[in-house]
Every structure is written in structure tokens, then in C-alpha cells.
Length: 309
Image 1 (cartoon, rainbow, N blue to C red):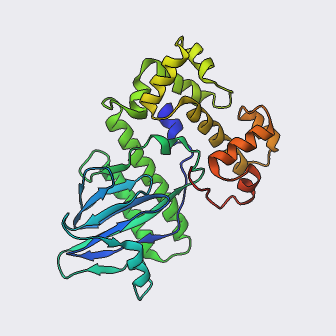
Image 2: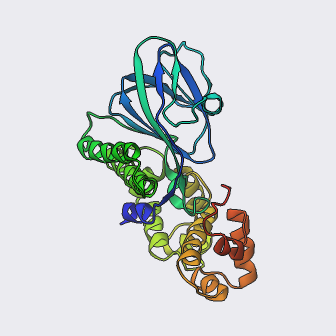
Image 3: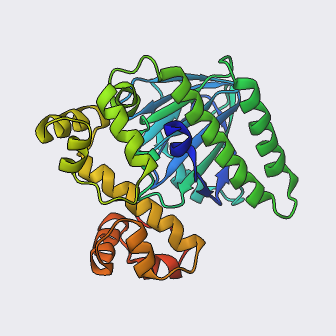
């Protein structure tokens, strides 16, 4: 149930995709204020995300740099990298299928941005590793391959509605990648959210929180529910989940409220009460701190994605 809850409501706002063709020697680097995915359409390359060991990618591999942090892709680890978006701006044709590099072996990529709706409050972003890598040879890669093939087909088609279909396919790609990550690491992870789920006490706490996000939980009330001391519970939660319990509580409540703001015409008082806030003022303050926008601004400008916290 917890895994289903984390995957529920994943939806992207994405409109820019690139299909670079890169001839060795080549090296590009990029960073963006959103998740970035890459599909190796042809050839092979090296990917390095800051703080993560280099990963060799082969044809058919799919990767997501979950927080869009700076990363490099290149034919060999020794090849210098240049800013990708700077290259795109310099490309005379202005097309998204730019050709860069030298005269050597060819690598083709499909790259795109994956901007979450409600990304400032969605609990999934807080628990994902910096990099998701689904290899073509892994279990379930056939299903992923069908989705990526459909995505490439839509990008090639030029048909009306193609961008919207590609964005929905990006939703599916991410859900598949996250599901594969959860399934592969659920029984072996020694830290983080997956380890927290297996912990008898913290796993129970997460199940309670996700089942009843609207309740005004406090560290003390949840610790009492689990027959733990407040300090022991808070320390164990932070150790496994990676953030203090109160921050996690708030994220769940704000996420529920943000979803309701864009999917209903309910009054702020009703939404604040349903999310477990004692007053509209307290709700507005917490919402703006988490998302950078007031609830009214968020609802009025629903297509705008709030900056991450």
C-alpha cells in the first residue's frame, strides 16, 4: 500500500525534449530545476552524477537524474564536457535533433525534462536516490522498451497532440523506473525510505501517516501510538527516512492540500481543515513555506510549477 501511495498522483509537466546525435569524441553536461531523463537510442556512453560513481550506459538503457542535479554524459570519461543547453542555443537550425562532437562512433539519445506537479510537496522526491538506472537487460525492460519506442514514435510523428502524449508517456516511464527500483531494493536497502518501511516501528509509522495524512500528527502523538519515547522515535525516523518526522508530516499534508486545490473548487477553510490545520492562517503560512506560493496563487496559476524547497 505504501508503494502504491508513493506512486499515486505522479504526473509530469514536460514540453521540451531533445534527440541529440553525438559523434566521438563528445562530452556534455547539464543541470535543470527538474528531473531529467535520458534514453540511449543507439550506441553507448558514460554518465556521471555529482556524488555518484560513473555509470556505463548501453543501447536501450533508461536513466532518470531525479533532482536534475549537474551531471555529465560523454563517450569516454576522459573527454571534456561542455554545457548542453549552450550547444543547443548555438545550433543554427534550432531543431531538437542536433548533431554534436567529432567524426567518431555515433551515440543517439532522447533527453527530456520531467517536472512534477506538486513537486515541492510530493513525498516521492524526498525518498528517491539521485539516479534511477533501468538496464535494457533487466527484468521488466521489455515493458520499458515498448514505452520508450512509443515515445520515440510520437516525437517522430509531428502529429497534433504528440507533445501531450509524450508527456503522459514520461509519466509511465517514471512510474516503471520507480517501481523497478522499489522492487529491486525493498529487501536489501540498509538506509533510506525503503529500509524505513521494513523497520517494525518506523514502517508502522509511515503506514499510519500515509493512511491518515489529514490528522494533526505530532512527534509526541505518533511516538505514543507506537509505544516509543519521543526522542527515540524522532532519532530513528530521521536516521532511516532522512529528514525529521515533523517535516515529513507537513509534506504529506501540504501535498494532499495542493492536490485538492487544483482538482476542486473547495473553500480554503475546508481544505485547511481536511489537511489537519487548525486555521486558514496556519495553513497559508505552512503552504507558502513549503511551495513558495500562497494557496490562492497556486490555485489561480495552476499551470505554473512552484519552485522546489
